[in-house]
Length: 575
Image (cartoon, rainbow, N blue to C red; front, side, top):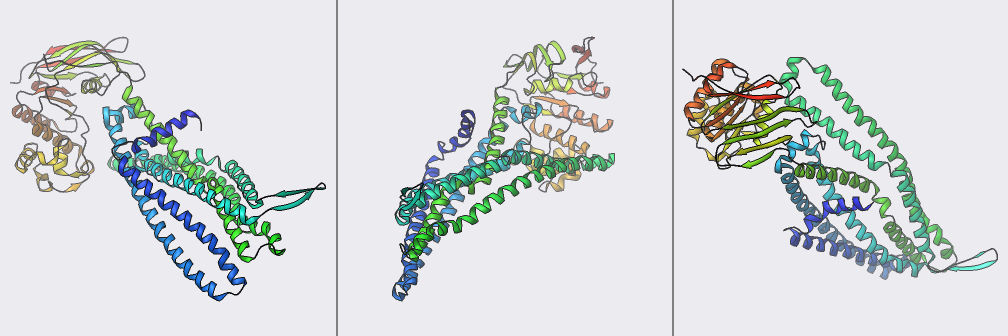
């Protein structure tokens, strides 16, 4: 792992351990380490018990045999208690870590509209999966792998001296020369684990990339299924089932093909690791058998050697045993590092359009130009001022940049040049063409983005009636997916109800009445103007019928080079 990747890993892992949670986190970690050391100590005692117990069996020493059975009972019970509490504390620490990281990642993703900009520029795929699943894998596997490595190191140092002592020297002749290898079982364990680790690492290396791709394909397939659920009405009207099935089939084919690749690598990995694990059971007995049959050691010594060899070999085989988890962890780290980099890029991207605070007027555009992310110019060199209480209609051809202009005023569209000045003391509300409906009670959907308890029932019921939604009054405290339950027209009327409740100083309507019939559209504007007579209003609309509710028209006219100019015109007052 190069220094850049190490830095990325450290940047993901470090923050929690130096955060406000560090006291409890380090306390739990120290307790887990202490329990791990206790488990290793009991394993050492059980290894010593092996020699005494099996020697008692060989010598038919019943009193010692019975004594050792009782000793094994309390050793086993102690091991069970420590193991249970270790798992319990580890799970608790993992959830605390995951909760903290999830909160920080969500805050970072939502801050400065990073979720919006990263999606606009396609900086990262499936951010929902990276927050929901990858953070879980990162915290769980980081703890399990690091604690497993620590336990293996402590086990190794605890049992190497035992294995060195009980295995004794091995004498042999080679080319007429006599050699003695002290603690020969230790060297056999090292050699066995080294060869196994090299083979397993070589065989399983492709799993890192394959695991990364599998997560990507799974998320794409799941996203396709969600899209069908969210757009079931339109798909049914288009009779697009065949096309949707084809797209889902292609996405699932990617999952299936990548899974077959994973299966092939896993098959080779399992052959190698299972052979390694099974042969490790008999290997120490084969190597120690000559000394046993020569009478140099008894049955208890042979069993102690086999047990100690297993502990040393198991500790040295940490990489082999943890390889699958390491591959998953590495793929997860890569995905989270990519997500983190994308969000950072969205936070620090340069803004061509300057947003400035100016209390002189509600809104002023100074030499404003709007561009698409690819650099294409939509609107060129616009300077306009909006007075308090003025109502402006933005009109022009489709695709000319009307909605983009509103997004730039909202501060979420950075592509372009010039400046936008707004009075920061004035409250603003934007009603897009497709209104957002949070899943929850109708009260919460109506109050959004404010808390549900801000308004009294009388206010909510009255505004529903004013917006021709009185049939929804009985569902005020009913939880539902309102974007699916309500028609587009009902959703747009509910958005107007929000505006009447919020009473903003500046209101932006981006084709917010496109799903309404002409009569209802005019009714919504009449209620809006009557209820909020002093509101500063900017509307994007295609119907001329709403022009009478505005005083000024900003008309976009396309120029020969492709960009548009904005020309202000006065509108006749409503009769």
